[in-house]
Amino acid sequence: MKELMRKICYPILALFEGEDDTVYAYRQSYRKILAGVATLFLILAAGSLAMTLSSGLMGGLIPVVFFGGAGLVCVIVAWLGSDQAVARIWKNR
Figure (cartoon, rainbow, N blue to C red):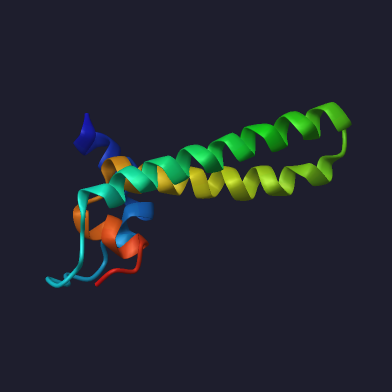
């Protein structure tokens, strides 16, 4: 199942797994922190969506798209990405 999801999400993962650098700084806590950041972004997106729907102003969809997209990328890299991809999202090489 994980390999199928990696194939589906390949365009996003390719951005962070591109080069074959053998030197990168990775700690297991980076993956946990990235999952936490993804959760926060998704909570912000859900809150923005709720406020947008209650107010009826469609300009509120801009933060929903931004925070939702950032949260989705963080979730994909945290759960499906390699150690190198997680290190590259933190810019540790």
